[in-house]
Amino acid sequence: DAKTTQPPSMDCAEGRAANLPCNHSTISGNEYVYWYRQIHSQGPQYIIHGLKNNETNEMASLIITEDRKSSTLILPHATLRDTAVYYCIVRPRDDKIIFGKGTRLHILP
Amino acid sequence: DAGVIQSPRHEVTEMGQEVTLRCKPISGHDYLFWYRQTMMRGLELLIYFNNNVPIDDSGMPEDRFSAKMPNASFSTLKIQPSEPRDSAVYFCASSSWGNNYGYTFGSGTRLTVV
Image 1 (cartoon, each protein chain N blue to C red):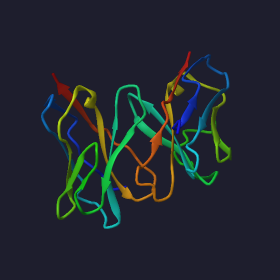
Image 2 (cartoon, each protein chain N blue to C red):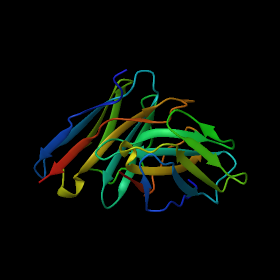
Image 3 (cartoon, chains in turn yellow, brown):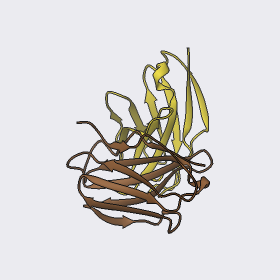
């Protein structure tokens, strides 16, 4: 798997947009960018994925740079329930997922 | 859909005992994964199956660990004999080819070996 680099932790005020960065400078052409999160004591939860284009769903938006070497996950209106560890993963679609350390996001009231 | 179901939720056992963790994947999913999570090592992939066949068991730590998937709706992860360093949360996940929603994880089994 291509390596990803994420900040170990971030803070965000409740109601604001949370922007979580991820660097994946060695990503290959057939590798997707996936985001998962893990709320305390729960299993990881799929958020969103993309290949080249920006993607949006009911949970978040994913912005991938044109050279695909980095991406940003955006939670548009963060709530306390968004406090979690967020994992950025790059891999060919349907390949196994290897989790890194992720970013611990704290939503501040 | 009830999601991925794991049992038991918590297991406390004595060192040397056999432990069996169970997983029921989502119906129709043809991939099943076993992960282990500890504070020190994070989330580690132990083994995964495709259509009930083990595809990659390179993450299984040692011969004390074994996993089976006798049918599409059931998998077990067995540790025999168990050791205190096996204490962790074990997650099962399932997915299907071309699934747009990634993996679905169960709630995990918290194993404590004393």
